[in-house]
Image (cartoon, rainbow, N blue to C red):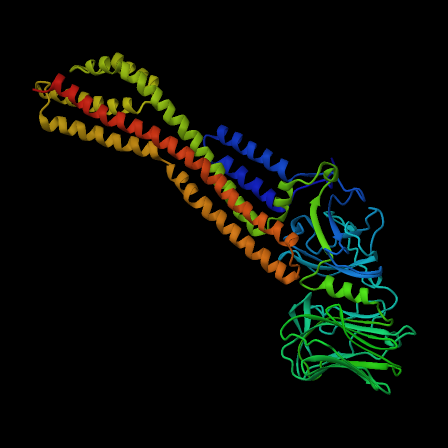
Length: 613
């Protein structure tokens, strides 16, 4: 087993440290070591990931990413070539703790488990467990329900495999992701068509990470470069738009050319115009909602809204050239601006619209796998543990410490009460003999030796310690009476004083028996609440991550919710054994308490019979 093929996350290692610390500090140490060893072995069996995936031994973990183009997914009528597919990763579908913090160990491999795919990361936030990755899929065939690619990760020595320039085909002239770290929008393609200027503000609330926000006065200026000039096969302009309102305003305007292309809001609908050609969408836009817009320029103008053709006008389009301005006069947000120097097909546009939005139906995420899992089937426990978020691990670690400490208390306390009950029974058989042996006279060495031997024989007996307290008090009084020449008889005040001494010892014995029982009550009452806290926070984070990623489907939600419930299960796993153990110990302690109370009355009565007037 190599270092790469067996990896532990940082949080489980912290758990080992906590458990070892508890084992070292608490007593008896032998019992604690055994408990800790069992817990650590079980934990290691759960989280140790052994072996590697089929593509490379250096990448031990992988996720199958389905590409469903059937009627249940994203139906297309014809094949789509070189489609950049957006992969949204969040806590519900990816184990961020097992990947590098910057995602540089990500690799995408074709279904043959051999061919690497071009990809680039738009955003990877390991702390908040959210990522957007663009992968170029060579071909999407229609009606393919079982098509898939592999996502490999988990190699700590990996260097970044990003290839933004290779993620797009030659016809892609410009792509702006609007990265939050860039003051000026940068082109992700090999053409380097970076924005000439931008006064619009980058906001982190975009559909795919960041977006560009316009207030009616701000703008984005695109460069006038030959690589953006429409080719012989036309051009395609596409972007996601979220208008603040439906007021008439230009959205995209070419600044040069005889009859430049203009895309604008008119009467709540999108309108595309070039020269004498004008196409108005058949359906209105929605305010304050993200919608995909595409305009294809070839033998006329074709307008698409959310992947559906909503307007088309045929005719000759004047030659388009020069730069363009976006957003001047518009109020709202724009995300994922793309310009292609070819007319994209209807299925290509449909794929972009329905695979990038919040209701995407193309990408289906499978469970995380390690070597051998594909043959033996997925481990549901690994799926659950892999989807637990950092806050969940914190709660589970606390509960694990509570479980170890409570288990130690139950074991040591059970041993104590059982030994006490056993020695009490043995002491009862000798009580008559011992109480009659308390006589006035000198305390010689033989008597002291006999008392020490008796104490060792009944060292766990609470009744013997009550007897010893009373016998010591009685002998002390006999010694005083002998010095004063008084008769060795006890008065009522003397009996009351002896009883008070025995009662004080009784209180200390009860405190000894009930010591650390509060640990169990805390675990019983606090365990489920801690687990519930972890679940609620986990559910909140899962929904927040899904909302941010825009991946709203049962496959995205289910793992995160299931993993969040692990914290509740952990809380109950602590509370239920503690409840049983607490009730058992309380019954035993109650029996011992009753025995001691009865013994005190019996002991005082025998003393009064033997030594009072």
